[in-house]
Image 1: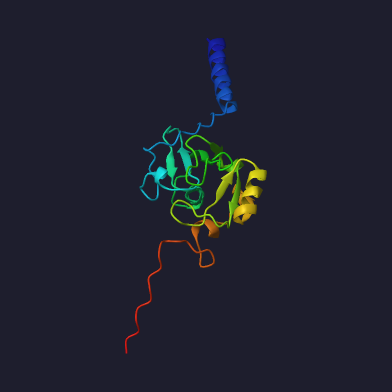
Image 2: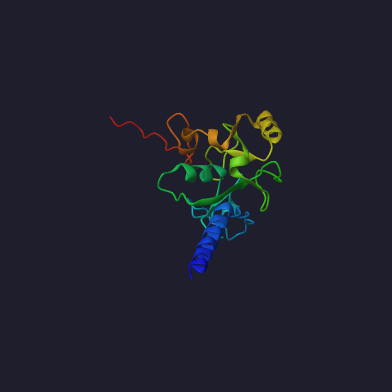
Length: 182
């Protein structure tokens, strides 16, 4: 009986070792359709210009959609958001037809992209955008036309994404000052 028990233990340890060595494959991006609803705005992401984002959480095959790449970056920075991220994808604006049509299938893994921050282009909700590109050459060419600077995902300043007094977020028209009363 002892050889059988030893063989069973060895088999279990071998199988456990194999599962530790195998990496779970990263989920592939999902094509953007009219069913894609923005996580923060609750609106159809196709209704907004500029780059979009999608995050896969854990084993769930359905992405969490974002109306802008900036919102995807914010999700990763906010402590109250889920942290079981299995994949991050943003629109590859190097392959986009235009700013108004960023594409349904041209995704780049967000941590591998080059981002332009501080450009004259505004994201889907009118806020400063983190404009993603799969190549640094394309990102630099974008800055030549629209201003800004090229950074990597890990170097995007939290203040740029989350907003501060130094980085205004465009929430629409400013209220007009009221007439002074005498």
